[in-house]
Length: 141
Image (cartoon, rainbow, N blue to C red; front, top):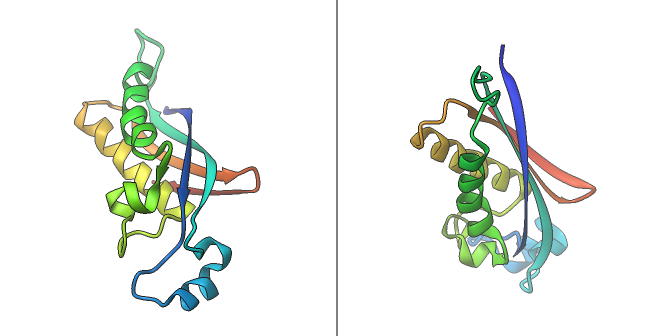
């Protein structure tokens, strides 16, 4: 039997939706206000869910200290108080559009990779990124 654990991390960041090969008018037509050159920000809430077997000795599926260090590096340090389009290379001009969907997938991949590299037996199965109380996107295995 597998168990699940979800850890929540928050970050504040600015972004805008823009496809580099499109004109400003086309970007605004498709993305609306989210394409404006002045950017806009959110106080994001990110839930990362891992799945694993409960260790008979510790009673845990993952060492929370290890998970928290990974989330600090891969989420907090990467995104908090940043302009995602400018400060996070993978979302730079002509790369990933910083939608909730792309953020959830990116975080899932980065945290999952870091956990595997660290030898954790638990694996990331779901990441949900919420821009506010009315909009969230999830990426799951």
